[in-house]
Amino acid sequence: MSEAIHRVNHDIRQRRLNVLRVTDLTPRMRRVTLGGPELQGFISLGTDDHIKLLFAETAEQQQAIDARALNREGGERPIMREYTPRRIDLQANELDIDFVLHGDGPASTWAAQAAPGQTLDIAGPRASMVVPDIFDAYLLIGDETALPAIGRRLEALPAGRRVVAVIQVHDEQERQPLPSQAQVDVIWSVRRRDDLVATVEALPLPEGALYAWVALEKSLTREVKTLLISKGVAQDALKAAAYWRAEGSASDD
Image 1: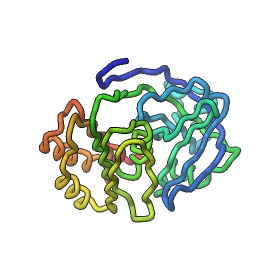
Image 2: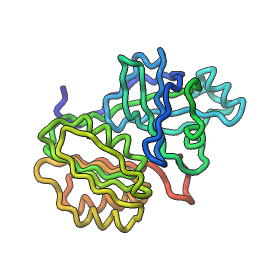
Image 3: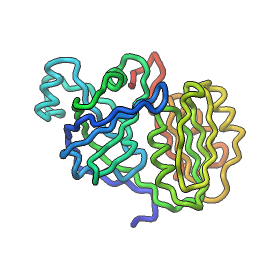
Image 4: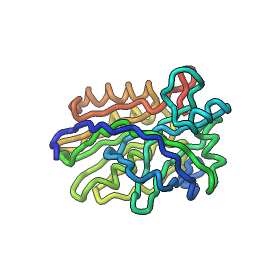
């Protein structure tokens, strides 16, 4: 096993899965449990892996999905959105995807009407970034869109690790249980940009070898990353990802 953060590439395969269950976790977060025989062989080694969900708004887009010809030249490609697998159980052939219900984008619109018996095509992940258990402490900073990755990492961490998680949510009703064997302190921040930045700025960094992970709106991710570097977080133990873009730039759903 590698004792450094490393990337593992995967063969990309398109899979058609069935909707098995739909569960509302909070007023704005819906879990869709997918399954079926095509899930066999699915690999996701990183807790923040992302897969592509495929949606069609036109007959031609649906034809591309049905033909499993996502990369063909010419024709209309389906709409794709990236999501983190929240839970994978290959013995039960189940995969959980958590959706934030907001706006009228293709992923939110689909999740709002999802019901058992429907199908959804997925592809990927293309690769996994594996973070081995070589750190004493973890600092996880994200918003609702990052909760699947944060929750999955917390569940994977062993006892004896310390975690500070700063999570920005729409309102108090969006808090979720986040089980972990690790020692976890969760700071919930209602969605106000200045509040989150001030919280991170005032936060003492956990002692020991630290891994920091940030996933927020694009400009906020950049601001928090800069702040953490100024606080002394090592750049080779810091991952910062833009999970979405604010209105006025290219939209992500």
